[in-house]
Length: 150
Image (tube, rainbow, N blue to C red; front, side, top):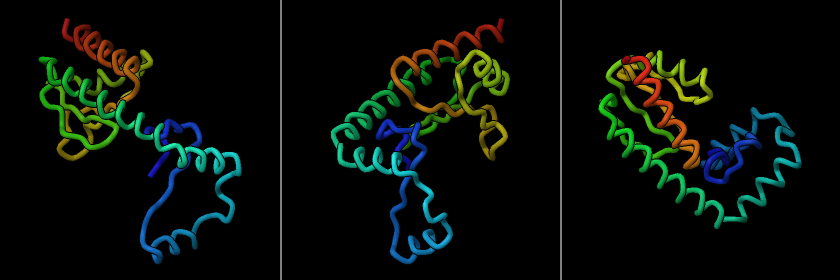
């Protein structure tokens, strides 16, 4: 599990594992002895004590995921928005997914083209961000589709 979205700590690049004692022991056997610096460890420990922030961030993420899914479903060039229990949405376009992905990336809106994955032809994956980031993504998606369709 990472501390990226829920704790708002993507920048510290840290996660944690929960598992049975024997599995955790196997993981400890292969990791570097001091693979987390003390500053990162301190930030993570403080975050784990602040469950109110976690709850607020998760609530916001879930609400934004619903908003983005709703808006994607309302676009006539989006064929399907797949159900999600995570911090991203996978959606299928009528076509031009790879072109759209590249143009949006060139314009500063980062998504992931998934059209090469099994059963994901014409699919793009978007990570749910802030309200502003999500609005920018949706605006860019519509603009690029319209430009390519003109």
